[in-house]
Amino acid sequence: MIKLVIKWVIFALVIMGTCYLPGISVDSFWFAMLIAAVLTLINIFIKPLLKLIAFPINLLTFGIFNLVINFGILYAVAYFIPQYHLENVLSAFIASVLIAFSYLIIKKV
Image (tube, rainbow, N blue to C red; front, side, top):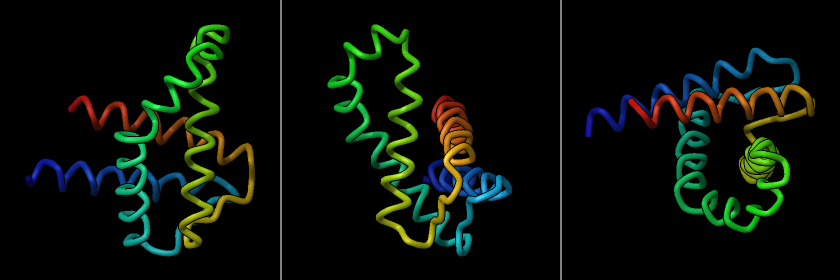
C-alpha cells in the first residue's frame, strides 16, 4: 500500500515538473495528485481499448500513433479538470511524451 502511495506522489511530482514547460500549469499539488489518479485510471481502463481500436493505424505508423493517443488523453484530462491548463500545443505534446515515459518507468518499478 505504501508503494502505491509513493508511486502516486512521484507521478504527481512528474506532472508538476511538466509545469515548467511554457503554457502548462496546475493550480496546486493536490490537483496534480488528482490528475495523476485520473491518468492512471485512464491508462488502466480506457487506453487499452483505444489501442485496440487504433491498432491498424499503429501498425501503419510503427507505433508512433501511440503518441497521438497519449496527447489526446492528456487534453481530455485538461478539459475535464479545469485546474490543469494546457495552452501551448507543442508543450502539451512534449508533456504527454514525458508523462507517458515516466508512467512507464513508474509502472515497472
